[in-house]
Image 1 (cartoon, rainbow, N blue to C red):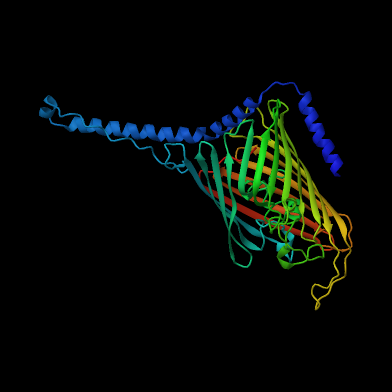
Image 2 (image 1 turned 180 degrees about the vertical axis):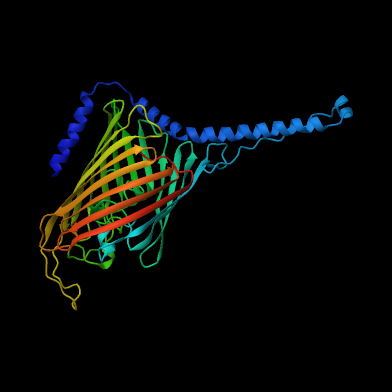
Length: 477
């Protein structure tokens, strides 16, 4: 797959937009989003109103009993009626905290905890699992403790902060600000601006937080191309909702290209060799040293019961291999979902998700003498091409129960350094079964079969448990 192929695909998507009859308007798409949010909050509002009605009934009954016990003489000349105390709405665990601002400001506060336990036949479990939130050792793993704050800043802005706490395999605590950003809510011409620290909107899985994944761990291609923590950095993003009869949105993010969260770009790799070569972050010298990520996302209703989402993404920026070396990553993503007209609580359903990625990494020449005490073979300048894909199917066969299967494969063209554990072919098959006792918890059992070239096969079994406290905003479909 090459750049021309991606350009041709993007052109085809735009051509489809021109041929589809104009049956809906942009305003309809926005109303659909509002309707979805209202439907998600309907049960919560209904529960709170029921609690308020019960509280009012109890107060009425208490007043009636007081009047019945009053003396007969007092009934002849009743005192002035006292003003009943103001009713206070009962608190709900999923109720947002309201700040000052006459109801215009609010804050949703939630805490999500994700744990795993299990074992693997691999001696190097940390190298087997490429994701920073994957189970990384035999026994128990604290995958992710996430405190999320989100809400309205004012009529024009909304904000979100995600604070993450982890414990690594050595028992060391890790605390970080995973995301902290502002988004506009009322720009004209269907535009939206986003600024701060945020996950890059590349494909479907990269912008998602671990508790929304359908599997215990992230796909191999994401771990190999984007690193353990995914592609994210400080920056800004603009999006435009296109005036098409179906959903179509263009994104362009501009972010810093250095650090461990820019794995394939200006990442120093914690001083270790990458593809047999030393890397450095370097300094930002020009606008072109930033990371640029365009994306086109579309959605089509194939029928009353089927929805199809298609997307294409790219990430373009310098890497740390040399003074003038670049990295290009291209991706295609597909998501299809079937849900019958007669369903209860979102069940039954079938979904199918695919992402295919290609990376071109310009590797500088290296003389092999970085460490005189441990010299390595010299390597020439070359362009390394890697590719990978994952495909996953989920079947919600009854309310609260989901069976899923994912297949992963990554590989790359042979380079001067061979074998290279960062580029060697490998594949994985992972079935799992998830039970959701409620919308606030889940239990997942997953088996992984891994095959790594030059290392052999491994078997792993993981059990994952999650619980959620508080109100957590709805995630993108």
